[in-house]
Structure formats: structure tokens, C-alpha cells
Image 1 (cartoon, rainbow, N blue to C red):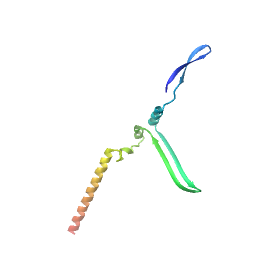
Image 2: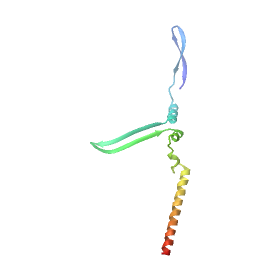
Image 3: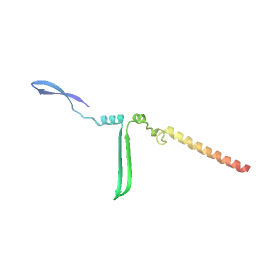
Image 4: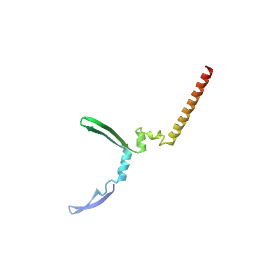
Length: 115
């Protein structure tokens, strides 16, 4: 917001009155929203007569990453499609599951050979 002094005559004297000459820019509004966060919530319902055909619940949170972490939201850190570390953990998990399955099959074959 830019504040510019403007002069208005009053009672035969000059006084300076400070007024706002420019509103908030889109960047200012976006910075405030990301700093504080904003939640948009709504419900949509489609009905014919008294029969509800479709119900949708919409919840939207817009905030900065730091603000989201501050309020306990950090799902993207464990999403294998968004995080390389999570992707590596997922790959390691699949390899371990395959190894356990292989060992279980080997154990079954040993038990059947003994019996």
C-alpha cells in the first residue's frame, strides 16, 4: 500500500492530509493469505424431490508450506509421487516384501521336503 501526502486548503491555511492512493495489489493479498492461511469449506448436494442423488463435501486449505507444517499438515513429505525420499522408502519396502515372500516360500518347500 502506498501512502502519498496530499494538500487540501482548510480555513485559509494549508494542511497536509495523508491518504491512501493505491489499494492492495494481488501480490500483497497472496502474501497475506499464504502467511495466515485460508480455509474454504462447502457442501454440495444434488437431489430430485426428496431423494439425494449426490453429496460432495469440499474442504480447501490454502497456505504456505511453513504455515501448513506449523498446523501439522505435511502429507506431501510421505507421498511417494511427490517426495524422492518417500519413493525410495516405498521401493525398499517392496523389495523387503518380495524377500520375505521368497523366504516364506523357501521355508514351506523345506517343511514339505521333511514331511
